[in-house]
Image (tube, rainbow, N blue to C red; front, side, top):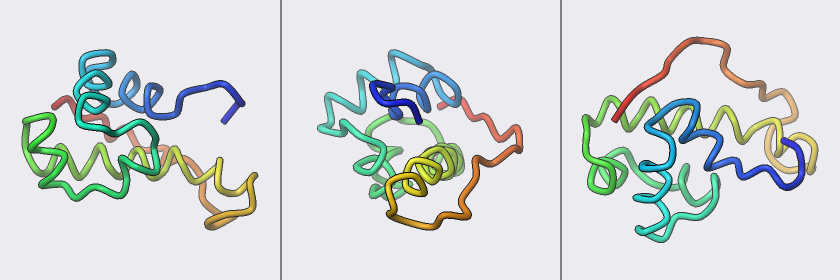
Length: 91
């Protein structure tokens, strides 16, 4: 990810409801992808509403989006690549 790009905002825009999802997450104290992917699907449901399956999908997309950043910074798995499936979910 390019420096200055907000990964959490990008995931919300690509795989959820964009600014409204981001606003709910920030209100709940979640400001980064790392903070988001550390949540359980149940916690995400409590914050965003929607189904647990939708929350699991959004968490998977966020984790996949985070992996390339970890590879460049020397943390996490260097083999992680963005999931190319069209597993977009609206919560």
